[in-house]
Length: 114
Image 1 (cartoon, helix red, strand yellow):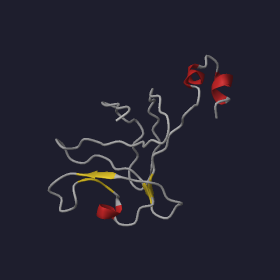
Image 2 (spheres, rainbow, N blue to C red):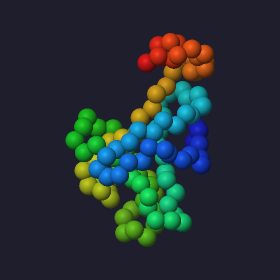
Image 3 (cartoon, rainbow, N blue to C red):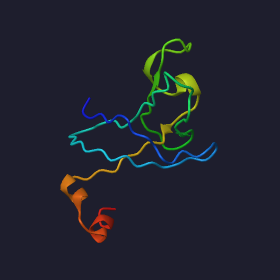
């Protein structure tokens, strides 16, 4: 594991069937291929929200962590094992080759990153 962030509370969680975007800053330097994901810990409480899935897009490398006792293979699996057709989970990442650019002091320089 290269980087772990915990205790994040998302602020844009609309009701189904709407999807919301949440940006979580990550300060982690990565070289080469990497995977971005998260796990919402609902082990002590009822499920409160889910991630959106793309069923017919160009595809990706989605994983989902299946907990024991649900009748499916446990651990990290492709979401199709549990949910059926899934090309990608709607998780994305913005990144910069030069992380110092993210500390830009002006709005104009921030907009230039995108």
